[in-house]
Image (tube, rainbow, N blue to C red; front, side, top):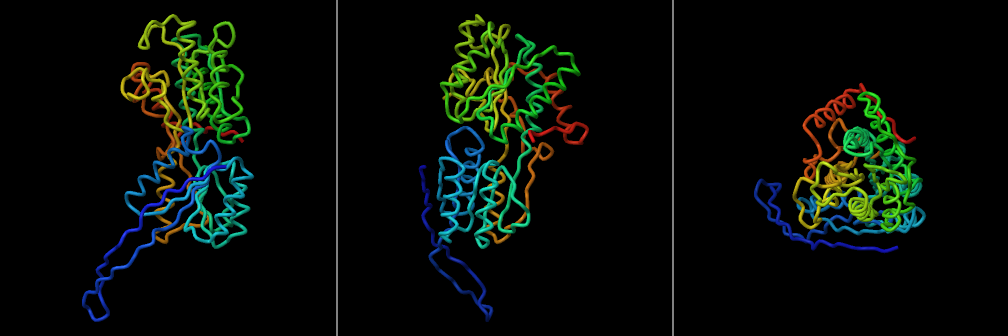
Length: 371
């Protein structure tokens, strides 16, 4: 377990108010910033998932409201519950923000024992009977459906074999992503007779194991083994292993002499849980170009959720018991807009994705989650 604190210096506010007799009174008081704690399970921040997007929301909020943030990175769910309980017992935090659907039962237990402490759960939901918890869920499976459609079409440049390599098989968010992806792939395959096949799902077994991700993805790309031309990879920080596997496969089996070789372009990857499109660029430090091998990413806008919840809490508008449902209809879960991959995605394919997006938004297509 590790911890990190980021304290923003208190500021002096000079307020101009009306006095009881109609004159002006200048009040100069030391302002004590609100206290907000954030709890996430390892690998925590920097894992290329929704946790990093939450950080973006906190950074954006810091430009509007001064807060003291305390961060706790827990080793596992048990450790997270211990940290959440310890923070609540301190009785000094205006809000405790917890990230991850896998922690919703732990938040429910602690929140029930600390009814005067406000909590926010990002990525899961807690019983509405607990009026000291606000929840935000993300229908990532809806955006993953679009990713499945996209995978079916871009696989036509190669073997028409698609693989799924995910982080852990006990993560409900991963289960939702896989369910939506496979439904979208199957729908497009049937409708357009794409002739694609899907390999058995593989798991890294961790959120941060690039070596295992690399070796597994290489086997999936290997023409004599998996023969995949596209991999859907919700693997979080293990994504660097996926990049290395793409490089190895491209050099070893697909005979591409250039990163930009279009005619023989294999392999491709679709990412999830955070915007990782830049990882497929020739140089990750120069985020420009149109030929990323990571064609798109399935992204939940957790930054918007955490901004909204903290802002409302500090303005004394905390909506206890409410679950904010972020979905494709409002654009709060989506696939990224091919900023770095326009070379591989035709306008016709974009139009097809738009058609499916509309069908999901109006209820014509109901996307199944992993439950």
